Structures are given as C-alpha cells and as structure tokens.
Length: 244
Image (tube, rainbow, N blue to C red):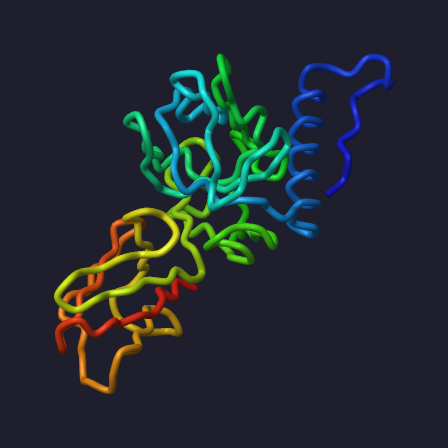
C-alpha cells in the first residue's frame, strides 16, 4: 500500500491528491487495527432512545447517564460494543448502528450520552472481512467474549447496512414448564443456526437429573433466537449458542 504522491511539487498538490491521501490514511488505520486489534471494555446491554442513526455518532434523546453496562460503569474514551438490544425510554438498537463505538461522554445530569465510531471502524469505510470484536477481562456476562461480523455483502460500508454481528457464544437456561432465559442481553438471544452443524449451533445439558429431554422448538435469529425443550417438569436445561 504505497503512499500516493502529488503531481508536480509537494507545494502544489491538487484536490485529487488530497482525496487519494485520505483514502490511503483510512486504509492504513484499518490495516493497523486489524494487525493489532484493540480490546473493548464492555458490551452495551441496554440502551435508551437515541438520535443520529446511520451517522456514526449516537446521542441520547434525553439527558442522563447511559448507565452501567454488563456491570461496568463507563467513562469517556472507553471502547464499547453495541449489539441489537432494547432498553429504557423506548430505546432499541437499529441494526445499521450496531458494532463498535468510543464513549465520547457517558452522560449524566443535564448531559446526554454520546457514542461515536472508533478509528478502526470508521463511518463510511468498508467492513474488513471477518471483523472481530474482543472484550477484556471486565463484565458480568461478556468478559473475554468475541463478536464477529458476517455482512451479507463483501463490500458493506459502515453505516449503510446491518453488519450482522454474532457472539461466538451465548449462554442460556431453560426450565421445563417455566421457560427460556438467555444470558447477558435481557431477552435477546443470538442463535445463528437451529441445529448443531459445521461446528456451530447450540449445546444442551440437563443439570437437574438424568431424565431424557429433547429440543422441541429451535428458532434461529440475530437477537431473536429461541429454544424450548420437552422433558420432566422443573428440570433445568443449560447450554450455549455456538455461532462461529
């Protein structure tokens, strides 16, 4: 990836040169980020209503703190990952807005929260192949987790479509006769495929007894997945989605 040189002397580059240079710098930042990916501090597990969809900068619709996320109190400069989640005051992630962000301000009294795209995932840049987000050692449910983009287009541009981020793993519990409880994102469950195949799907174990059980309903979905099991009442089935 060679640095483009301006026509003529360095003192008189034209407009085309500056465009080439900008594109070069964007690609350089992405290349460095791919070689040395940063660690993200937290997964956003609940979000209030915001403005700025598709712009790369999300601002809370009302003032107030964004709140603790996965048990972590955020600070300006933190890298965070926003999946498809719901939250208070009518908040919910638009699919096009999912992905990595920097916390500009977590918000507070008289101040709305602001999140903006980080240098490694610039608004308007092409999403790198198999782009993966890695979480650090903090968090109640998502510490050490990985999320990977599976866009439907090989040249999807950040801010123009759903990047289809999936967690590598997401735990769940199902109490027969009571119901299904995904772990970590409220009611959102990420299940890329409804049966174990090609190394991914879901696992299941009866933690209560040796009673037989079987999956009676399997629904794949990006945040809308679900599982149901048939067996002995009150038995607890646990496992995890395995998405890549």
